[in-house]
Length: 168
Image (cartoon, rainbow, N blue to C red; front, side):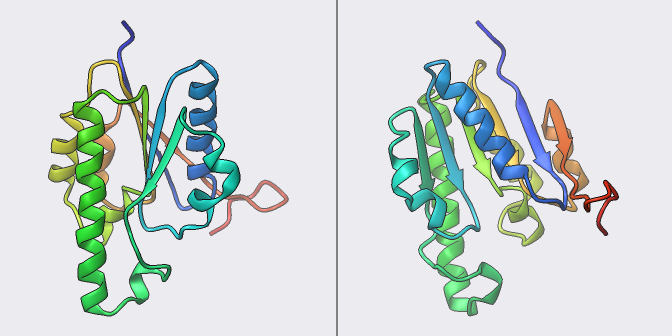
């Protein structure tokens, strides 16, 4: 039996989610199941007809209801979305408890730390539910350095300009 790993794809650059989705495709090509739970993102990608054709091997979930950017919502609507986001986190726990997939991707979960929807300790407790052989990828940018200690491997994504110089 393989030992499952916890990966973080982080950084200020673009490409964290596409890297995770590439891993999802590789996993599905091996005949294994993938669950992706998206946080703080619009519907677009997960509602596309193409993505639905990847089921049942790759299943994508989004629990937020709003189409608007979380940061631009009123306080009442933010509270509603926080409730929905926590439902998504509870669903992630269920996926782990039922050993439903080989790879679980928690897309943009790290940003939830910086906007105080969850704490590093809550994320750590969630990850304790991980089955021994499941891989988990968490994406997003966070200033909470303690989050990186939760992973077996951390990849920092940076964006460069056409000359290969890092954009600031």
